[in-house]
Every structure is written in C-alpha cells, then in structure tokens.
Length: 93
Image 1: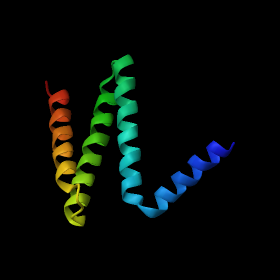
Image 2: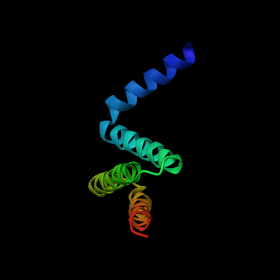
Image 3: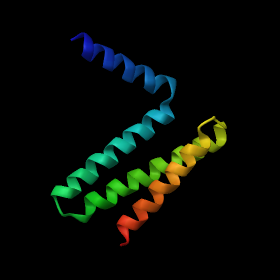
Image 4: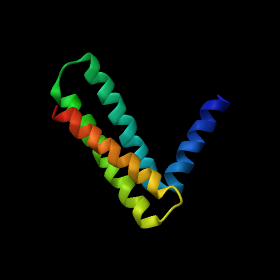
C-alpha cells in the first residue's frame, strides 16, 4: 500500500508543480495506448486520435521549451519535430 501511496503523492505533486508537463505526459501516454490499440483493431479512428494527441503534445512541448529557454530546449525541439514528421508519414504513407 505504501508503494501506491508514493505513486499517488508523486502524481499529485507533479500535477501541481508543473501542470503543463503533466498534461503533455498524459497526452503522450494516451497516444501510445491508442496506437497500440490500433495495432490490434484496424480502425482509422484510433490512428487519427493517437496521432492528434502525439502532434498536440509535440507542439505544446516545443512551444513550452522555446519560451522557457531551458538547457534541454534544443533536444526537445529536435525530438518533437521528429515525432511530428513521423506522425505525418504514418498518416499519409
């Protein structure tokens, strides 16, 4: 039970300390889950929704890192551009 309480406290603390990053993390987790579901169920809705979550989170991360001038901003921007390009390639083969 302590482990569950620890994770719950960490989740609450993370959402209060940095809510933008918490929402981006949720969006990326949902995108991964929907894309895995798309692997088993051949419906376009899962693919489009998963890619929209991924692209939305990528754009949000890129904007946040550009504004905040953090040390890892360049790496985050390269990663988000790669994710957006990959998403577009998957959507339009």
